[in-house]
Structure formats: C-alpha cells, structure tokens
Amino acid sequence: QVQLVESGGGVVQPGGSLRLSCAASGFTFSTYAMHWVRQAPGKGLQWVAAMSYDESHTYYADSVKGRFTISRDNSKNMLYLQMNSLRVEDTAVYHCAKDPATMGQGVILYNWFDPWGQGTLVTVSS
Amino acid sequence: EIVMTQSPATLSVSPGERATLSCRASQSVSSKLTWYQQKPGQAPRLLIYGASTRATGIPARFSGSGSGTEFTLTISSLQSEDFAVYYCQQHNDWPLTFGGGTKVEIK
Picture 1 (cartoon, helix red, strand yellow):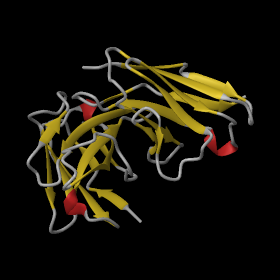
Picture 2 (cartoon, chains in turn brown, red):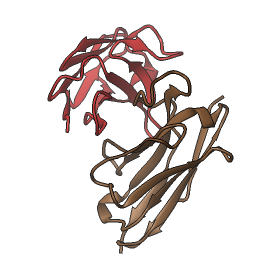
Picture 3 (cartoon, chains in turn purple, green):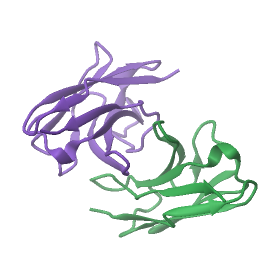
C-alpha cells in the first residue's frame, strides 16, 4: 500500500534551517505530483508547497515563498522541503501528501491530498 | 486568497443521528472542493473530492454536495468511528486553502 514517511524535524532557533525528507513507497513515485502541508499545534491545516512529478512546476504559499524550497529525487523515491530563515510561526507538524495527478493525464496537479504521511514536528524556538 | 469558513465549529451529535457540516468559500471554487477527516494523533484522511465524489473505501454514509461557494458534508448515521475533526479545502486556485475545521463530538 502507499506509504509516506517524513523525517528531519526537530528544534531549531529562529533564523535557522532544517531539511525535511519524505520517503515514498507502494506506488510509482516518479509519476505523481506531491505536496507539503503543515499543521501548527492544536490548529488547522495550511498548504505549504507543491511540485509536479517531473519538477517542472513548483508552487508555494506566500508565507514561505523565498524561504522554503520543495524538491524531489525520483531515483530515490524521496521528497524534500528545505526550510531556511525559520520563524516561530513555522512551528508545526509537516506532512507530505500525494496528489492524484500522474504522468500522462494531461493534468499537472489536481491539488487534493491522498494519502498523507504521519508528519514530522518542527519547533522553532529560542 | 480564497477564505474557507466552516460551521459550526463544534457539532454535538448522538450516535445514529445525521450530521450536517457546512463550508463556505469567499468566492466561487466551482466544484473544486474536498473534505478530510482527522482523528486525534492521526494524519488527515481524504473523504470527498470534486465536492461530491467519495474517495476509495469511504462508506456511503458520507456524502458531499454543493458548488460555487456553498458546500455540505453529510454523515447520514454517525458511527463511533466518525467522531473527529472535518476540514474542507478548495483546490480551485492558488494558494490552496482549508477551512478552520468542524469538530464532531459525541452528544
């Protein structure tokens, strides 16, 4: 079955950097678009970033644009989120999620999420 | 940015009763609306996409309706496993945005 496992979270000071990873299995990762979505403790969901299957299209929430970079390594079935200039308000559980859009459909992204990984907690605090 | 507003924030329902959750968009999102269920300590799970299409494996007691700016998720007869937080999300425009959630609790 499809499995997404995030790692790389931790405690970092404001202004610091962190790189999150998402290991995908159970599907042909290289043919699907992917997203990062975050959830602050006790709060709702916020979409962060998206990438098409072939890396040709990337999209970011305004709150992270210029600070975060989504990337992928299709040879390793891995999705990444490089987070720089971290702020206290970036504290959240970060989930990777699979988009239904796949190669050959003529659609880059459908922009809903199924399934989600369990997430990795990022805490930005001094 | 399209703002998604869910109501009520909390819904108290007895098992076996019907639950009706609402989601409103600040501008039209056509039928590009999804619903997710999240239980404590778990990742969200896709329930409905395209406003009314149930995801694979989702029981028929879950149904979605609406278009434009007004959407509804109905759970026809609440089971114990349905008590959770439900989120709507628009996928019509960037940035993708979620509603604040409706917590369905046991009455």
